[in-house]
Amino acid sequence: METLSIGQYELIYNAFSFGFATLAAATFFFWLGIGQVKPQYKTALVVTGLVTFIAAYHYFRIGQSWNEAYVLADGAYVASEKTFNSAYRYVDWLLTVPLLLVELILVMSLTRSETVSRATKLGVLALIMVALGYPGEVSDSGSVRWIFGLLSMIPFLWIVYELYVGLGKAIESQPESARGLVRTARNVTVASWCFYPVVYFAGAIGLEGATATVVVEVGYTIADIVAKAGFGVLIFLIAMRKSEDSEAKETLTVPA
Image 1 (cartoon, one colour):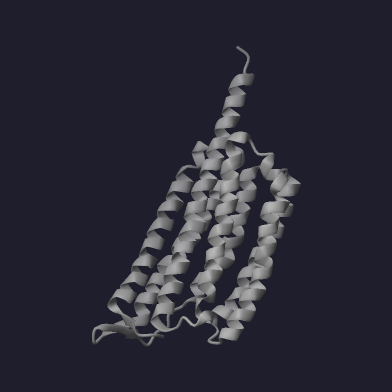
Image 2: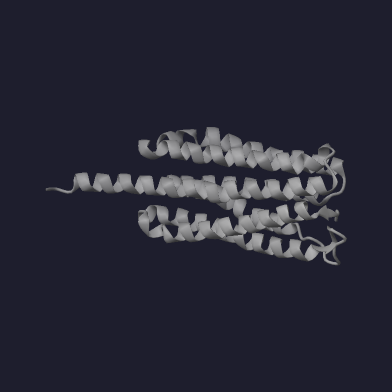
């Protein structure tokens, strides 16, 4: 546990607080919006809200653990008797990362068999990706961090392939009004996930001490907000756009 300046400690603490508030507010927004979409998209919004709910809970616990892990002494924050529990992040990711991919599959409203197949494949790949990253995250060895980081990139690249190639035709078959949003949601997923390895490898390229702690904790928090709350807003917009299209078609088919 590094000694942190007051500014460094408060920056991280405020990032955790902001993350909790954003994700909690997003949860209410998504769940309260369920009644605004057609039945076939309600499950997608339930899952979207579940992702941000799980993440908000873990950010609350992360903030508590951070507060307990340091004490102010002589104008700086030093380690207390309690250790900061960074495992909360990985518990969160094991639950939420697969669900993020399931959100996208559900809102696309594919056939039942295709939904189950693609959601299962992407979910399993996401679990493997997160599980492979954890040993490197908790290791003090830069080489171990590189090894497990690179191993976790294998399922990550497979997920990227599935999103861009495997889902290519399915995305192009989406209603024209929602197609651009679906592409954007896919791109946001990949772009935000690319930020995680940048933060992950910060400690493996010579960044150490308090600076590394700030980069890792604030960096992961920003990535989580974009990947969960930001992505969730896109899922909500897709569900709304497709629901509006369905209502318009129903109106046109109703005899005068």
